[in-house]
Image (cartoon, rainbow, N blue to C red):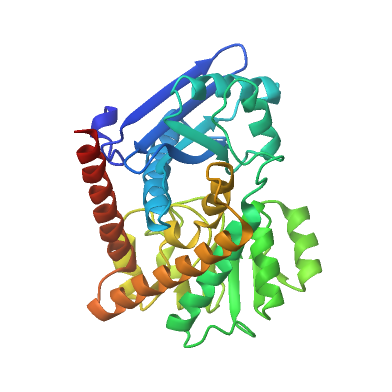
Length: 355
């Protein structure tokens, strides 16, 4: 299958495959849309089983960033990059300097930040060879706390519709990927709100430490998180976790979390709906981080602006879920249609401006 026939290809504007044998870099940088401005989205480093999985991931993630940024009404487009983690030991700084050179070759059409497996310090290394990175320690820094705050507010909105109240006191929540950059911050918000937490992660030591801190229950087998009899399932790890193998194991009324591309296919949204499970579309609920990153791209940025954007995002999520319930349609389809219409309108305005 060629790239253009790939099931996840969505008329992406540009896809760059970059290698650097000296550092072991194997990266894919995808620009999905620049209709609203330069594409912005994080860089993920992961041990992909094959390049085919990496291609699928970057295509889906970059499309999701376009949807996320347009739904948050930000003056930027959507893009994403993935690095296939080298086997064995490697020079991390040299690797990200090589990634920076690849990024620089796109001449500002794509601006990167950190994502899963990548830290602000990695972006500092990339900054040595490109100007087009954000999320730096001397800028807005790690966007994870703001992402977590936005997801927490989104969970409240989803709980209001799926459970009848925003109050999370005593609400049983199963969190997948609890110790990640976003997951740990989110768990602290949920614990402070009085939720009963059941936590899973592949990093056992960090998981037990977090559970002890928060008085939470550890789900020892990460795969067993789907089987927890809870009110809310909160995925905060990797994508495609709502799929034919997992969906019938869920015993919850709400799925709302920070992970990108939670649905393996768009049809999984309808399957959740059939089971009476409220779903918070991921690219709407988890946009807090990119809102925070705007601080390095927009001089109007301040903390009050970020907080206002998070409140608006919560309202947008609520409207999507209300429309889905009223029209008896999957929430992800409602969100996709709105995002696509906004992108089409932006593309039309860009074309008119160029005439």
